[in-house]
Length: 91
Image 1 (tube, helix red, strand yellow):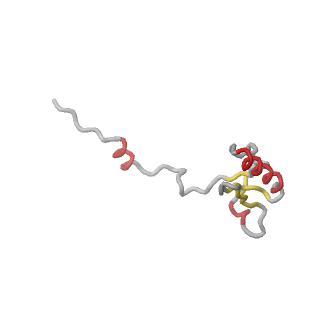
Image 2 (cartoon, helix red, strand yellow):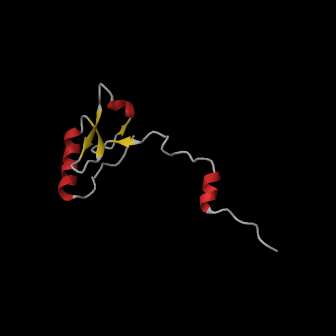
Image 3 (tube, one colour):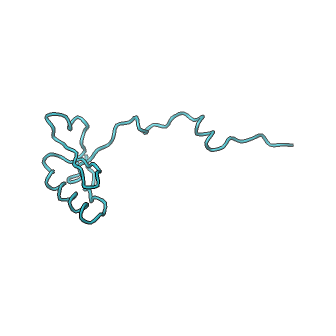
């Protein structure tokens, strides 16, 4: 007796409904200096958050009040080539 053909992993994924948490959900953003949660609306005028760019072109979020500390972290990242040492996230 012959077994019925099973679907491949790619075929099963194509038939499955889309999973939540994909690109359609908004980003969860935290300040790299203090770890505070930043809402996307805080980047609009009057801005209380900003995106800083390192020498490599990557962008990192920061509170306006933490901008000096965040720039120091990015300078360390640019100088050593290591990843940015971001503060732990808190809400």
